[in-house]
Image 1 (cartoon, rainbow, N blue to C red):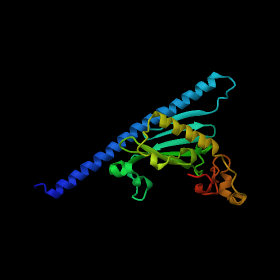
Image 2: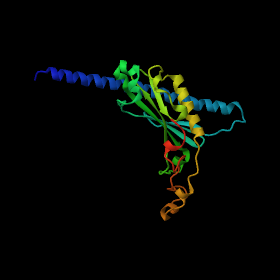
Image 3: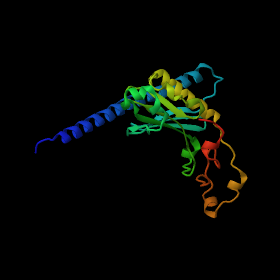
Image 4: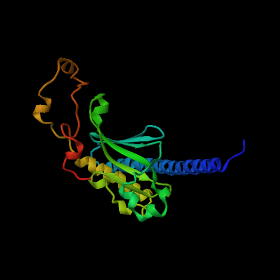
Length: 231
């Protein structure tokens, strides 16, 4: 069967879109691999810090590479989990990024990979408390050019108008990891309201020693958006 003009246009669009998404994926994956190295360097630097002075306490500070798309950083009583999504996304038409001159000049720049950053309590994993709550504290958007911006809580937030002027290079990665650690240190575990925990079932109490099913989270009893810390 002869290829029609419609077929030609369709196949061309297919190739172009697939090529773009593959390019974004490869750039994001390369960035994520470099981010892993930065995180591991933080662990190495902390070990040197501990060795430099015997007065420095050897607090838990370690990383675990959990495969191609995940790495975790444990420090003190917290865990930061960095996860790269395997898919490529486009910003919605009403997103602020779509209004920037950077994207308007080249709409393909609106396609991006995502690296999500979650904060959990270390004890949630140590004691297998599967009902405990973790929080998305930031996410990194990276496009085909390696340009990026970050949406997140306080220290992790970048303004949209920087999109296109910054590359997700080693300096940016160091800033990101430091900001994530600093935010986590300042994001303390709060006691839930009494009324939220005053009742407990027999089953929950029987399992209360190591696997208590009462939820624990830094802002338990509140929606995370309502913790008075602006994005």
